[in-house]
Image (cartoon, rainbow, N blue to C red; front, side, top):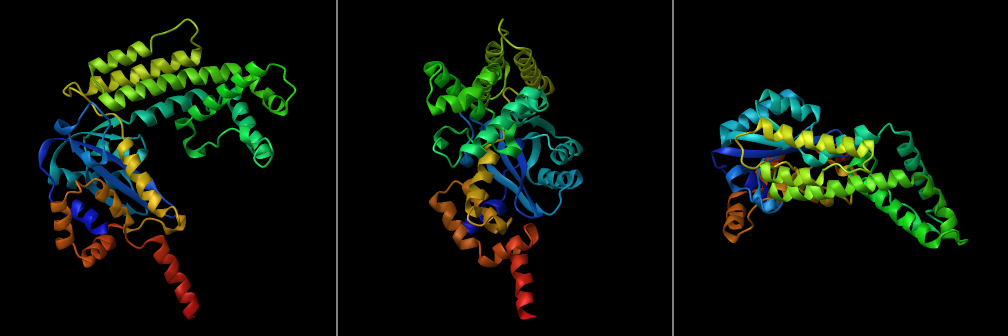
Length: 355
């Protein structure tokens, strides 16, 4: 797998004037961050479905203890010399990536998933009722997770990505409200334990409405890209209704503004890729390799990422096995990964044992 991954990184890339890149940095246990840049020619994007791993090419993959905007800029300039013109880049709005793209003069498309999470954060992070609802959910999990009522506890949220997965708490809240509506004043224990949810009914219904909008809009844009036609479709979904709350109205305004800003700054593009889900999927597969030992840190197992993006045909695999040696992997690792966390750990404890 490592040989095939390294082969895909090292083989010459096609020079063209229509590259789109997708980039992100993965944070692991320890001090290092792995920066990955995937690419696809705009003319090769199939806007009838989401991207597959085999659609993209792994252009760059380097680990550093600290990335800066300048370092990303230099990497992108080297990449331009290798592949030609980069029409635009899809990424989140982290300071480092944003600065690197700006310094390189590359148009930055804000990934829709991260953008929507940012909108939700601005709407709910400081809202008192939302805070109380989350505290009540956490309290219920703590008090009931080992009890006979553990089957009704709310799902656990990912704290670092709370505003990317609000759907799980609104869906649970809706289910609880439906149960309370059916049972009405029941004296069974589940009903009594869930009664508190009724206090947050308006908030839960509001979150549910917003999450339905998110699901429909993201599905449209992630499958078909952003252009004038998909913009019209999304605007229909975002039409104002009499029962919209202020926050629903503000959410709709923010999403419309996001789509219009992208189209206005990229008038030359017929369709625009606006999701970086494919790189999140790559990181997810890589992390699965490390799941048995989170303290491993970043290693050359990251070569599984370019292996996933390979064509996996017999001819390419044969070339990789014939042309890439174990020594090549070791040399690439030394330059691009450095010492892994587990290697440093072993060296320290080995010295201690020897002493």
